[in-house]
Image 1 (cartoon, rainbow, N blue to C red):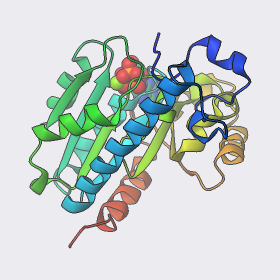
Image 2: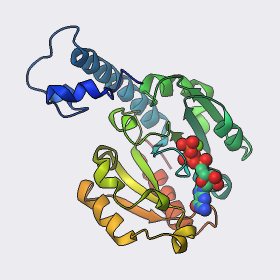
Image 3: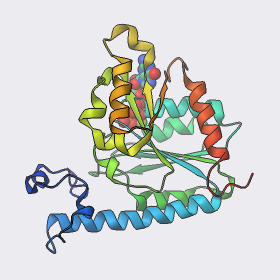
Image 4: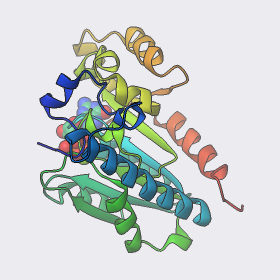
Length: 252
Ligand SMILES: Nc1nc2c(ncn2[C@@H]2O[C@H](COP(=O)(O)OP(=O)(O)OP(=O)(O)O)[C@@H](O)[C@H]2O)c(=O)[nH]1
Ligand SMILES: [Mg+2]
């Protein structure tokens, strides 16, 4: 269980809206769980601004990939890196509670990668990302992918300094997830609807899913993809290339 992001059931008994304690009008009593959480989130926000300033200084476009476990974040990255590594200089930060499995998979593409193990923690925070950035040559980097810990709840609250959160939803998870986990989908500017190759075996309603995602995140950009077959990936690559070109602080 993670105390830092307030995912304990107790938190809900105060009648507060989860994860928005920093906007509560009354100051929380010192030492209370809410006060601790407010401190953690404001400290995180300060460090996220530092990361963002670094990305801007270096002209790096940074994405934070979030999803439930197994939706296909690493598989999407593997294919994306293989297809884009000659055109764009990429690096990856991998977040998992344990193992370096995903970092090993990314390393096989030849792209620089740094694994962060969060142990009991259920999300990456800005401090971890700032530290991991020391591993890369920032003067030779266009595009940074941060794969967050597989968790559709807590990573929504933690700004890492990224340009956008990209939520991956695989079609096996059900079309109602945007409404069940609205904070994550609200926080995301892009949704990758992954594993469309297996749609013929499912009752997944694509249009309904997209409508639900737009209900919680009106401007969300949606790509339907299969990281297994490569279907739909070109539209995602096109968006990435455009965003890198327009990244804040980028000179060429
Ligand atoms: N059929 C199909 N399977 C996929 C696709 N993308 C990923 N998978 C499979 O889904 C499983 C999980 O993929 P990962 O890429 O490891 O998922 P992840 O989101 O990185 O998982 P965590 O890092 O553990 O949260 C693997 O068995 C993949 O082969 C896809 O587009 N189609
Ligand atoms: Mg992964």
